[in-house]
Image (cartoon, rainbow, N blue to C red; front, side, top):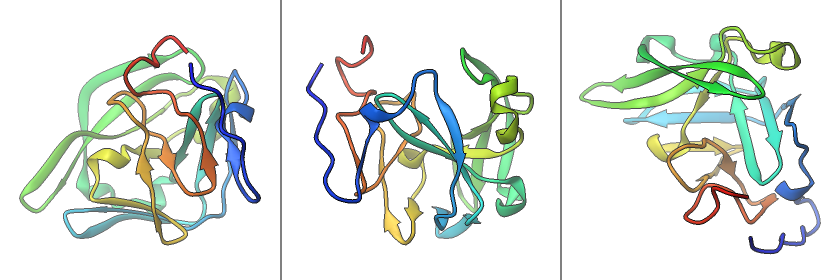
Length: 163
């Protein structure tokens, strides 16, 4: 494992995030764009913070254009949050699956994110925090949003599975 990067002014280190993870409200302006369409726009998201991971943002369903999401017959189990359900995202002639996920019935500590939708930044045209294009967390498994105010190193890339 690489040594944690020392955060500068106004930055957070993912190595200061808790394990087990926790959620918190976020008033940052989030936008998710796919095939030229803003499919999510919110300042009422919740973010999940977990050691070694950039935050994952969960957007209230009222702030997502649900017509662009179709449920997939796929689930997975998170030891902290419970069973995740997945969605394809389709706009016009483009589709990606999975492109998003949610926890319909999360474990009690994460009840506040029930039904909120998270998007994989690597699979969208762009995910934005306060107008800043975020980078996707490395790897194909996680959906963290890396912004200028977050420092790592981040779990997800080659050789990080055992962190």
